[in-house]
Structures are given as structure tokens and as C-alpha cells.
Image (cartoon, rainbow, N blue to C red):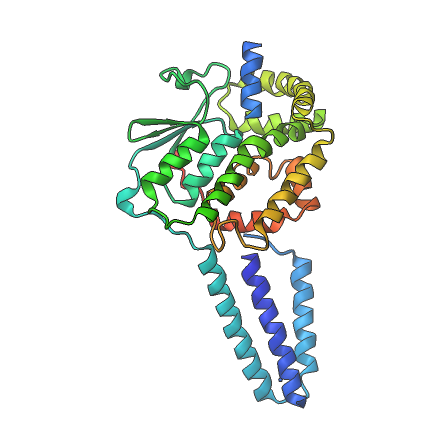
Length: 335
């Protein structure tokens, strides 16, 4: 993990310096398209080469000192690095619910790119709850014809239907998580930020991912590649949908009083980071439901142009990487 690597590098650096000191001193269809549309880090070889040269130079500069001092210092550094790695892993370690509380049959009806569906998936993934996915065709919605509720996400839990992403997470939390000790301030903060996600953050996303025709096409390429469409539908939806959503996004800007899409996205990202107030997560040493909500709705856009711009131009990247590590691999059951 990046954090553990940084801590280990820092520990070794301090030990080498200490050794040196020691040596010297240590339409309906369009409408449905709109609904669907709205809704480990690798180090480069160059960087590795630079690090190798730095350590070689540092060791060479210490050659005039005691070999014993150098070896003891490096041993201490390795111990510190191991401790740093252990601490980092402990901070990001999951706390899976008791096996007897985990539902046996969980099915999520979703659109792959839907931010609200991704909120639910972030919760299920973090708590290691196995689930199956049914990708809903946004044109026909035939996969949910059996339900009176015609939106996604729908989560079926042991034959019980749960709807609305925030309500789903609340009910699942009640089912699988131990009752928290009373902490009204912490609960109020978590609740406030979850509401902020639903009432503000999600409304900033569509104007950004459909900001230009090229970005709209990029977004619909992702939607059609991961959605449940026939070959003909893919072609129709990609180009007609992208064109339509480009114009719809302009109306959404006006509705939500957005003048500059990117500025609004960057402001939202910075607002979240300010809310962390220096903490690893809003939940402290581990993510809480607000962390999972923000991560969930941002996950579909992270590697689109808008998401890349957001990470490059705000401070949210480090938190997002910590969340990727904390949530870990998907607990989705592959068909």
C-alpha cells in the first residue's frame, strides 16, 4: 500500500541518517436512457531506479562509518518499516460482520454506472457480503417487471425487497452491524454527510460527465460496455444517448445553479476533504457509512476524464486511494 511504502521509506531514511550521525556522533426510451445515464499502486521503473540510486549513494556515504553501526541502523529501519506496514494494514483492516448475521441470498438489481447502485455496492463490498447482480436494461426494464418499484437499486435480501439506496444501507446496517455506543455527535456528522451526498454531490456528477460531446461519448461508452444492451441497442444508446444527455446536462446545470461544472466538482471534493479534518476517514481510523457513500458515488466516474481531473486538481486523491484499499475486492458473486 502507498501509505505503508511511504512510512517504510521514511523509516529507512531516518535510520541511514542516524547511522551517519552515529559514525561521527546516530422520449419514454429517451426518458429511460436519461434515467440510466443520470443514474495497489504501481511505481514506475524510473521511480524505482531513482530510489535505488538514492539508497546506494546513502550507503556509500556511510562507508567511512562503522559497519556495525550501519548494519544495526538498517536492521532498525527494517523493523520500523515492518511496524509501519503492520500499522497501516491494521488501520485499513476490515471488520466483517458475524457470519450468522450475513444474509444468505442477496441480489442487486442495478445499472452498472448508477451512482446510487454503486453506493450500495460499496457497502456490500466493504462488509464482505456476497451478492449477485442483475443488470437491468434501462429501455425495457424487463428484469424488474415483477416489482411495483420501477427504479434501481433494488436489493433482494432473503426474498425481502429493499429499495432506495440510503434506506437499503440503513436496513442492512441494522441487520448485520452491532449496535453502536451512543455518540450523538458522531452520528449527526455521519448523517449530515450522507445527506450531502444525496442532495448535492450526485447532482454535480451528470453536468461533469456529459460536459462536452467527447465526454458524453466517453461516458456512454462506459455505460453501454457495462450495461445490459443488445448489439443494436448499444449503438443506438451510445450515440443518441450521448447527444441527448449533452443537452440535458445543460438543463441540469441550470436547475442546480451550477455555472462552472468542473469548479463545482472540485469544490465538492475539497468540501469533503475539509470535512475529514485531517482524519484518515470521516469515521476515524476506519470508514463509516458517509465514507462509503462518497466513495460509492464517485467510483463510476473515477477513471473517466471528469474523475481524473478531480483527482489531479483537488486533495481528494489520497483519501480515495485509502478507500480503494479499505473496501478491497468486490464481494460480487460472478455468474
